[in-house]
Length: 323
Image 1 (spheres, rainbow, N blue to C red):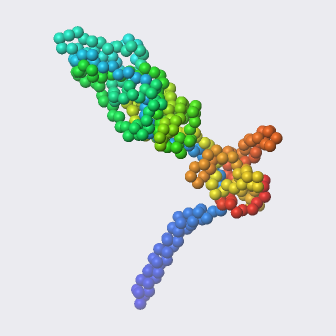
Image 2 (cartoon, helix red, strand yellow):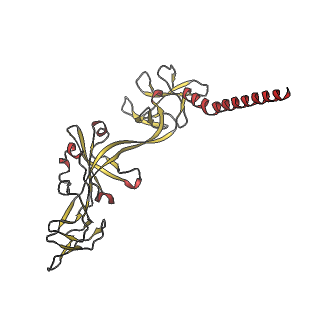
Image 3 (tube, rainbow, N blue to C red):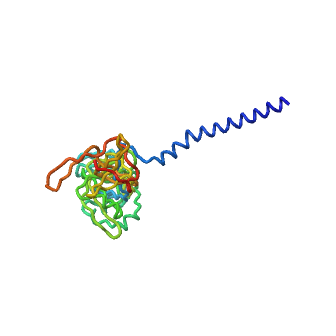
């Protein structure tokens, strides 16, 4: 009899123990998520957000391809991807039974041993003539010109003659609206900061169903020498400020945007805001204060939200006093 009682007590113990574990799990992991979702207020935090656009990129260079005037074996002298002075020897071609023909740089430039056949088509002078519909489908793979022998007319090397580098960016109407002529942008060829190139927009033009944006860069980016077409992310601006849920934004009777900030006595005051940008379901707004011109033409300072302010998440139907 005692044995059966002990077994029953053990079963009850383990059932209670398991129930306690489940309850503890729910308390630690589930309840905070539920309560967070039901929280009526949001605490403002500071963040940076980038305004970006995806684009198809055509790399344009001021370059010249040098071709062999005769067949023969080849010797190379110039280092690739290095700026080389005018008059430096790049290649010698030794024809069978003839005198070697030397090829030197006519102008200071960067030597590359990769060509893709579009060097004379994609030039700075013709960049605005690029047809986006055709360029979107283009896949240009570079060919290595280094070999032991050459035929007459074959490419030996190319030289980039300018310190400026150019990109033609193809994007849709919505993304193109984020940019303006003369604007500084960053073209990101990858997520690495080393693969981000700053440029200035020269032109923006609508062509068919796409927009063609041309830009000029001064930084030497080595992969430029081999890239012709690629997908990039173009960074228009970086905004830094306080993060406000869009649902928290409302207007006063004059149409000014603001949020409802919780006070010490649990009441809410309307505080004006100035948006920097909107992304998904949040807005980035100016911190502490901003300036504007009043009806008298005077510049005035407007107090705004501060870091760690607690704002009402859903302000649409709330009735509060203005600050």
